Image (tube, rainbow, N blue to C red; front, side, top):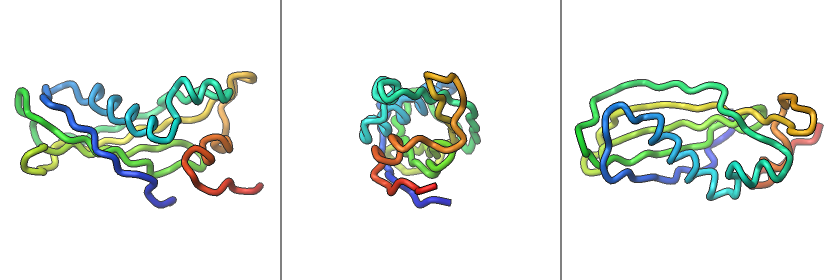
Length: 132
């Protein structure tokens, strides 16, 4: 498994139970923006990256208006883009929720899924492009 690329924290000033997917999306967008890999930039490179899988694990309840921190970490990029998430209490650090999302590259010209992530992703992440 490839090593972790980055661990930015994304803070939400007030959480609401049941909005986990929205919080994860905000953290995903913030993480990918740091690598210039936002949806607009990747589409301009000829690829779209649909989320094909999302897993969530409830660990403890979020309280109404509880400030939380979301850590998003890229853990795979060779064949798919997998991001792990951890939601924790901003004040105590208590772990509240774990999740992951998986995206795959879709070549816009052919409308086919790529079995290997395109070189543009590797370049933006700052990892060496694998020679075939």
